[in-house]
Image (tube, rainbow, N blue to C red):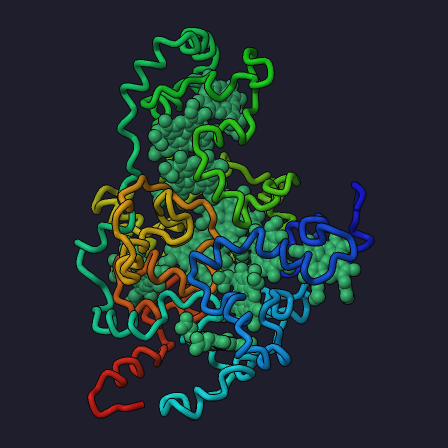
Length: 445
Ligand code: HEC
Ligand code: HEC
Ligand code: HEC
Ligand code: HEC
Ligand code: HEC
Ligand code: HEC
Ligand code: HEC
Ligand code: HEC
Ligand code: HEC
Ligand code: HEC
């Protein structure tokens, strides 16, 4: 448990989800020889909120029920490590799963017997055909499928409007600007403006200029409270942009920073990247130029400055990429365009970090209070929040523009994802048809 290089003790490479923190042993093994309970605490520490907001279909409490005790003899589903072990990279399935594909069988044999539609299905397919997930079934419940089953593939512009609505808080601007002018800092800053014409020119075009965030608001040495630091650390941004920083540190871009480790660089990662990008340390300025803060550059150009896998490079020539180009050319509104960030960094409300803005609909379905939803909106900086299983994108992203049947098929088609959604889906998720079928009066299944 002492400091120092622990690579010699690593019993096997970590899974795709945790490889960035694999040498930080004490993150999971918080006590040496701690065993399953200690590991369980570590898992829930980091993942509890995410699973709760996904309305986890198999929470631990379901298995504390004595009536389910016999199920646990086969597979003890109270513990995460029963299905997500570590240090076995070669035997680990996508999403860190280390239990065999047909494990649903242990507990749900009855379904195959009771439901006509399910009779000839392979247990391998329960969790892989786009029909069910183990944890997150928010977009897959029967009621949800039937409610949205008749939607056309592409919706009218009116609904498209919701996807990219402008971030709602630029209005404080002028007032703050004037206040800042009166403060000492602004006067002090004047010299720096004159000395650095390039940065001054970029900054003058930025939202920070409008909001009265001056050079010294970022460049002041926070320890001594005066003086000039050349490279302001991320904590400077976090002080003013808490939600963005917090979510940034929950995903693959910032998870090392959350553990006090050095930032991730492409050369340490397991994806394909642009040649020459290997040494770039990830930080806010990877996407946001520190002085001009142009969010359009951040939404596509910045990403493809690093990511060079097939899916990423295919974006530019995809139908969504063409929409994005039309927006850049001023032909359509921001709300109608799709960028990398539209899918990977959707907007969400402050109160509910994981539910995204599909929250409203969800709460209405749950009959919970639909009040207190008009909070401010911000961009979720955790690219992993809706990434896997990818049905998470249905509610928070695709369904703002597309109908459910089209979008669910598109997300089940791996080749289509590789082409970054160029073309119609060739996969078909049948559960939508079955759900509709069961609504027919003569079906008593
Ligand atoms: C992301 C969390 C995580 C990190 C980080 C991590 N481990 Fe583990 N480790 C686990 C899990 C989960 C298991 C499996 C427990 C099980 O299946 O019962 C495990 C098992 C082990 C075992 C027992 C292996 C066996 O075959 O029984 C050892 C030894 C071990 N880890 C050492 C380390 C060392 C050393 C490091 C740092 C170099 C490390 N671990 C980092 C999660 C982690
Ligand atoms: C320090 C926080 C932390 C701890 C402790 C931790 N994880 Fe994670 N885990 C993460 C992050 C960050 C990711 C990557 C982002 C993501 O996929 O959501 C991740 C990813 C995952 C994934 C998804 C992998 C994928 O490819 O989508 C699973 C499953 C997972 N963790 C399970 C566990 C289990 C089980 C434990 C306990 C043994 C555990 N985690 C411990 C932070 C943690
Ligand atoms: C009975 C097996 C099983 C158990 C127990 C289990 N998981 Fe999972 N988990 C899965 C499967 C299968 C997936 C793949 C996606 C899916 O089907 O939902 C998954 C996916 C995940 C993911 C990826 C993101 C997501 O929302 O699906 C995370 C994170 C995760 N599990 C964390 C945990 C944690 C933390 C625990 C313990 C509290 C846990 N899991 C217990 C089977 C299990
Ligand atoms: C260890 C036993 C166990 C395993 C393994 C298991 N389940 Fe379940 N599942 C349960 C129990 C218990 C319930 C709750 C039953 C109830 O409420 O009637 C449940 C409920 C469900 C539900 C209804 C969820 C809801 O919120 O209404 C679905 C869908 C489901 N499971 C699918 C799956 C799929 C798909 C798999 C495999 C990927 C799986 N289960 C694996 C025990 C298990
Ligand atoms: C929003 C915070 C912020 C504001 C406001 C800001 N800077 Fe910076 N500046 C940074 C960061 C962060 C860096 C570190 C280099 C990088 O990553 O771009 C930096 C770097 C610099 C550098 C080093 C050369 C370079 O461009 O990397 C100079 C010179 C500079 N800033 C001048 C200024 C001047 C003059 C102003 C006011 C007109 C200003 N900055 C306003 C955040 C800011
Ligand atoms: C003194 C507070 C403060 C600091 C420090 C600060 N910002 Fe800001 N930032 C603001 C305000 C105020 C706005 C205006 C919009 C708003 O209210 O969110 C803004 C807007 C932004 C925007 C939105 C631009 C747009 O076009 O909508 C980005 C991106 C941004 N900041 C990034 C950063 C980064 C990166 C850093 C650190 C290098 C940083 N900010 C430091 C206060 C700050
Ligand atoms: C992976 C690229 C990336 C990184 C890294 C990144 N951002 Fe952003 N950020 C974006 C994109 C893209 C948008 C605009 C998304 C859109 O308009 O659809 C954005 C928007 C913003 C906004 C304005 C919208 C809002 O949420 O109110 C702020 C403020 C912001 N980022 C701050 C930060 C801070 C602070 C950091 C570092 C902790 C950071 N960003 C790191 C890509 C990034
Ligand atoms: C400075 C280079 C850099 C930039 C810029 C960047 N990324 Fe990343 N990205 C990475 C690295 C490194 C990883 C970690 C991959 C790993 O752990 O294997 C990553 C991970 C991801 C992941 C998770 C992949 C997974 O399998 O879990 C997604 C999604 C992603 N980035 C999307 C984006 C988007 C969208 C943008 C632009 C808004 C962007 N990235 C900008 C370097 C970058
Ligand atoms: C229409 C929505 C959409 C757009 C636009 C989009 N992606 Fe993705 N992206 C996805 C989906 C869906 C996945 C697959 C998730 C899964 O099933 O593993 C994905 C996966 C990824 C991954 C992980 C790849 C891997 O091998 O695991 C990265 C990195 C990524 N996207 C980056 C980007 C970048 C960069 C852009 C823009 C150039 C972009 N994406 C545009 C939806 C989108
Ligand atoms: C902001 C609205 C918007 C969002 C969000 C969006 N799309 Fe699209 N999508 C469009 C538009 C508009 C087109 C048609 C572009 C054209 O025909 O030029 C399109 C085209 C497509 C196509 C290509 C159809 C073809 O015949 O070539 C696929 C596949 C697709 N979208 C899937 C998705 C998926 C999956 C998601 C969610 C991950 C998604 N889209 C999110 C607006 C959107």
